[in-house]
Amino acid sequence: MSDSIRPHTIVIKVGSALIAPNGKVDKHHCLPAISHYINQCTLAGSRIVLVSSGSVAAGKYLFTQKTPSAIVKKAMAATGQSEMIATWDSMLSSPCAQLLLTQADLQLNSRYINVKSTIYELLDSGIIPIINENDAVVSEHLEVGDNDNLSAMIAACIHADTLVICTDIDGLFNANPRTNTNATLLKEVDAITPNILDMAGGSDSNVGTGGMITKLQAAQKATDHGIDTFIINGMKPTSFEALLN
Ligand code: GLU
Image (cartoon, rainbow, N blue to C red; front, side):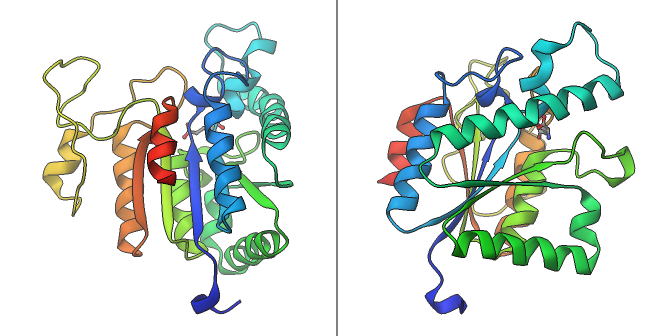
């Protein structure tokens, strides 16, 4: 399909804290509003690619280890991944497909082209690609490591128009809002300067792996490719109402 007649394409990244906040998929907390947003977008003719975290978090409840080793986390990912996909499949009005990727799939040209062509084919067929890192098998030197950066890489690969990163806070603050009551939300950022990067701390979520810094890295990658990026609070249905409006 030529770029001029391509429908609006949105990559939406959903973090682990929204999918499995307590070591198990929670279908009732945040997922209804997120699914409603995706369903409304597809109904309006947009094409959606979902980058979903949560495999490790969703598989946790079946394992007894309090501090799981790397291999136990891989086993959790293998378990939780199927539960997470089944959940999306039951909540989205379009059929879903699963793609599990590693950094290598986005580095080697022939694989990169396959990733892009498969996603286009799925979108052309009205199917929502659901992407995650292949956590069950990936090794440290071959991983992207977080789904914020992965979602930006995918958005660039398929020439998406918009990247929406759903997290558990309202967006970028000038200080950590969990520890600093004076922190102010920056509603719009024109350029991601070193000063802006300094405002993001590390991950303080005990569920996912990212944090604001990986979201800003993702925003930088995406906006470098001309892709508008939104970092929104996926726990608040009003965030999705605002996006739809
Ligand atoms: N791929 C990881 C998972 O599904 C999540 C990575 C992230 O939180 O960014 O558990």
